[in-house]
Image (cartoon, rainbow, N blue to C red):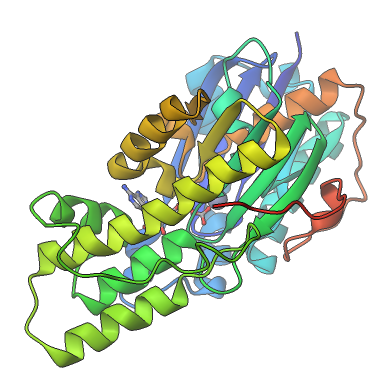
Length: 341
Ligand code: KG4
Ligand code: ZN
């Protein structure tokens, strides 16, 4: 069984994983730079890439030590090629390519979204045909997955990503970062029906999402009256979660799928999981979530996709370039599917 070392540096997490075969995770190291960026109120690309550069050699060493594997035993090297911050991606790609050249092994360039998308199936015997929902700080995507590598994007966000909406509203409310965790914590003591926030594009008849109107509604409310923060958090969370779950269920119905899988940082949200499980049961749909440690950015999901590619006969590509923007070309497209909610 092949041993893969994967590197993830698309944003502000430096991560390295070592995977044997498709499911034996020997190490998954994640170093978050969040504290470095906190004083700027957002990720500073130059700070991120410099930090990846200084952290990577040590983190690769730690991952090898924890896996009790020598560098010479690694059969293939992989890194995230995009989407993400261009200079941050370049650092991880260059490092993994350098190792591949030095050790005379193949290099695989992996799409970050594919990493999230397939993470709910990590450790599972097979990837079921399913509707995949990626909800993270940078992306909101609904994908119809026939099998590994055969997918079509059904919809994405027209403005803010789901996690971004959580983070921006948390900032408006003076809560800490990451906003999703803080909002979920405050929402536990709040009334989700107190404020009637808009359900953006809920009945748009497609699988697109929009969260900026919701953010603006919170802003106007705060300017207008003295609010209960827990009630705002609970009502905001409910509005987001309802749209996500309804569109995921509608996608399953439209595409005739009996499995829905959620991944990305926002899929950790307890209210999202509870509502998704309830609605899935009503629709006789099997619900899957990414394993806890694979929801926020990590290199294990990158190693997993690399392993699946190798298993499918994929070969290394040393001349692969970074792809900072989301590139739907990596997903098979077909005719649009109509949403009925
Ligand atoms: O997947 P991830 O690391 O980001 C990207 O790849 O972009 O997810 C980070 C995002 C942040 O926006 C964070 O606020 C959100 O996931 N998040 C949550 C929760 N935990 C993390 N959102 C809602 N509820 C949570 N429990
Ligand atoms: Zn991500």
